[in-house]
Amino acid sequence: MAGMKQTAQNNEERTSSNCGNALSLAEHITSQTKSQPSSFRYTKTGGSVRTLAVIVQCSCGPPGVTRSEIHIYFLYAEAACPLEDHLMASTFQRAYPPATPPAGPAFWFPFREHELIIQESEQGIALIYSDEEGIAMIQPHSALYVGTIDGNACIACEVMAEQPLPKGWRALGLRTLFGQLDDTAYSVAGYASQILRWQRHSRYCPACGGLNSPLGENWGRHCPTCSHMGYPPVIPAVLVLIHNGEHVLLAHQAGWGKRYSILAGFVEPGESLEDCVHREVAEEVGIEIADVTYSGSQPWPYPSQLMVGFQARYVAGELRPDHEELDDAAWFHVDALPELPAPLSLSHQLIMAWARSLQPAKKS
Picture 1 (cartoon, rainbow, N blue to C red):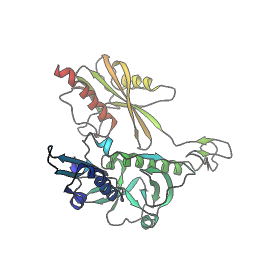
Picture 2 (cartoon, rainbow, N blue to C red):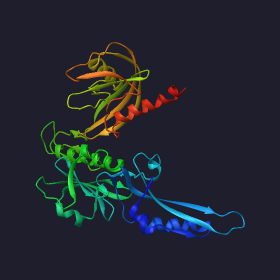
Picture 3 (spheres, rainbow, N blue to C red):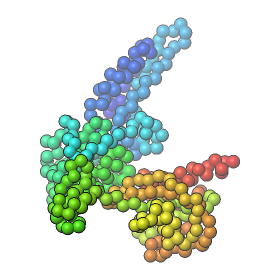
Picture 4 (cartoon, helix red, strand yellow):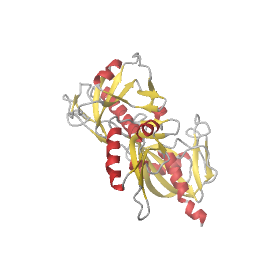
């Protein structure tokens, strides 16, 4: 944990009082610091500075001594802090047509082609938080109200490719922003990009070519000519971590540099997620596995995948990598892992969870 510099310097209070004043003092300071929401990463530490936490510490004197001290600490949670989910987590509430956004400034998600326009400063990268007058300078169009972050409207929109940006505003791809925005902001950005893409690509019916109409209660589209209905696509793909004692199977593709990851593949029509795991493992490395268990999922908006993670136990067979898919596959000991995918990716999380699961056994 680290202190929020500007607010701490302006508002730090250390005063002699009785403990009964602590709560009212904290409530007063908290109300002053919540007037301007923010959602950005503090780039020097990787910490999230989304919601201010105010912690009150009362140090009372021994019996017979009336003096006590109240210390007010202003805190934000860094990426590695286990308290972040409890103290600092923002909440996104989805909205669907024909809902209208609440009045006031909003978080804007303007996309210029496939890149999100954000604000940069010495403090880090932030979403654009503005009213309609402030965002008008980049001439947004195709605006869609997609929900709220902590009660603040989230508006997805598009910007012309040739549109110049104000000083301090920059367009970055979602892959580049991976790990730079906080988890909630990044999740909404991925959602916004997929809904905008669906709106562009679903104007005409894929069955008869007629002009589609909105369904009115969700993001679906309906063709009045042939009655075909369509919805924003979600393409499932599996990830599978295969373990053999204290070793894990990792693979490498051309263009990955030194990075290795677990096996992955798209689900085909007519197969279950578990069937897909067995097929991909057999096709890509030629081994037998058992005990396939679900481990978690993650949206992957490049452009519209849903990654579904599994673990499996190695049973038999020699590694025979499919060199059309992979240029290497090997077993790595838990204490000698290679370079891994980015920490926010599900593949990284599965590998780290497996490694942590071995710690009690190794200690004993």
